[in-house]
Image (cartoon, rainbow, N blue to C red; front, side):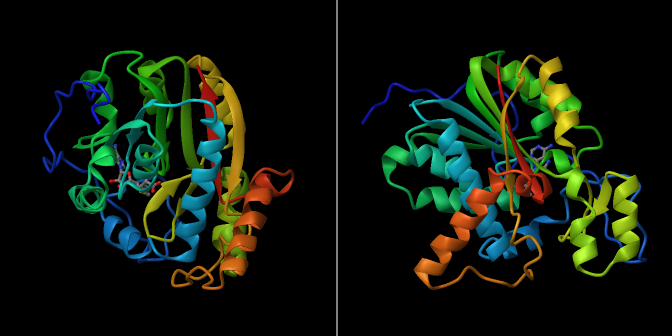
Length: 292
Ligand SMILES: C[S@@+](CC[C@H](N)C(=O)[O-])C[C@H]1O[C@@H](n2cnc3c(N)ncnc32)[C@H](O)[C@@H]1O
């Protein structure tokens, strides 16, 4: 069916044109991080763990929360910056939205392309995948080009989230939604403490920098700080959720329960915790929604 939709014009690099990437950061010497690095070097481990319990819970919770925020909105123009393997971009395209996914990593984009190729033609026609650095999106798309902009698991690797948030805000049409998924700085000590790494737990009280489970130097955000930034860019906080309250400390190789009832109960428990105080305040990840 011809929807009449044309993807927003794109003058950036073509698919698989890899822009320059910064350094990664493994803590092989037992050092604690003083700065965040980049996602480069983490793609292999990230993709290897996509079928694991922790990513499963993350993607399911984020999907439910996005669906709740998008209730009553159909055929939205969505930009997914750092779409990676394309989990959310694909789900949004299946739901009838018109999605542009951008990622700087050709391997992750290749996985997204492979998944998209399995979709029926009408879904394929609603999702375009592009290679590029999200920092440049203001050069490629005009102001107010999108109804929804999502940026999940990307700000974590930037030294300062504010410039990216400001450029994403400019791309939003009036009434548009900005969806950010970040590491929760207010709960940063919980993960190392659960692992018995007391030095890293103490470090987490002093710093927003940490090494994540991919071995990458990363950075966490406080809800209060993001709320100020969102107000400053005229996309004030509309709602926020916690993601992964109970399963964050599951081993990397833990898989979702095969028993369908257990799986449903697990997701229901995480879903409830992610929207209930005080549980959501200590979630590993924050899903923050701003509205223009
Ligand atoms: C942790 S993965 C998250 C993927 C996906 N958003 C999700 O939540 O499942 C982070 C992704 O962001 C991409 N990324 C990081 N910095 C980026 C940037 N400046 N521009 C575009 N993509 C970026 C990485 O290549 C990687 O695929």
